[in-house]
Image (cartoon, rainbow over all chains, first blue to last red; front, top):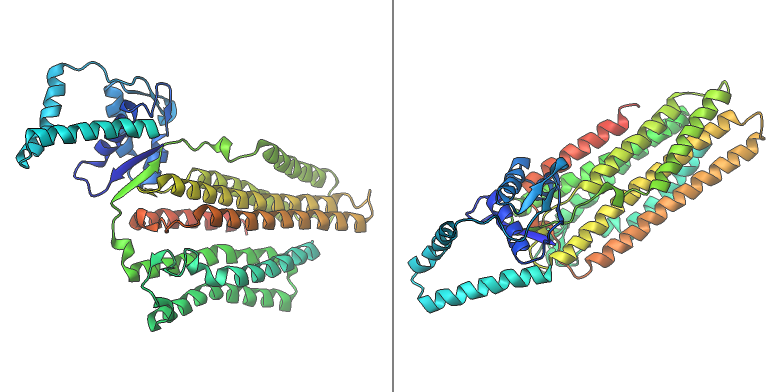
Length: 128
Length: 305
């Protein structure tokens, strides 16, 4: 199972790592009880600071998706993050949709993209 | 003990000549004619003036450490200091440093090390030490080392020089630490065909671990041989002990070379048809971690000498 990051992406690296792991959990590739590699291993492989990966793991822990244990290992705790108010989720969705609207895409086009991305996340989980 | 060093050293020289003729001399073509040391080159580049210059530089980089080794060997032979023969192993880190320097130079000149990789992948499966260490082998090494020390301490003759077992034991322990470091080491992988690249990386990691094992077994066999030669003299005829020690050391050496050759073949099979993964690595960071690793290796191995 692999985590993909893009050094040219505008998102910070810790965010990409957290998003990638979140995606794998949501798609079912990372199931409850499975272990993520230690912070040191991921940071070493990526050639980044330990704190970058530790921060990503802590973010996932705060969401209730993983539990960080001794030795900086993280165990997947749940497939779904702790219940967040619907308002928060809508806010996140709105933030993601705004650039598409600004780019001039129509409703149908946006819905097509959303469906494609949803399918890609699910497919990634099934493949892994 | 000098005859044992000389026998093993002669075997190593023969093997290295064979290996260089077969692979080392043309190693930059490992990924095919379209590449030179993992960097893509235009068609016909190898026979161009620029290509020929880089090939000369490459050959000089692999010959220079061996020229140094030959000079050191001649000095040992002229002064008859055969007990210093193991010191010639200095050529290994010097060779790696020269080769790495050559690769850095080439990557700088071709400009690829200034390109930061875009999309890369990392393996999310945990690398555990127990997957790379065989506990029966560790027990055997421990047994050989402890047995040799016990024999030398209890029944060692007057010719026993403690520097030898100390150095052997220290080096075996140091190589164990380095093997653990290698087992944990990893790099970013290309985002396309990631699974195939991950398999190549794993084969390489296991090969490096196996080579460390081979070196450790050889050194432990040497330690046991030293222990036997200097402690069993009163019990067993010296000739028998010497021949047994020589046979055991040669067997360990053959085993190590077999590991090396088989590992090379495995790496070739795993990487067949795959373009080099070098573009997925951020070399600005990679060189730093490699440099610190090599400095640690040199300091660790040569400190007791």
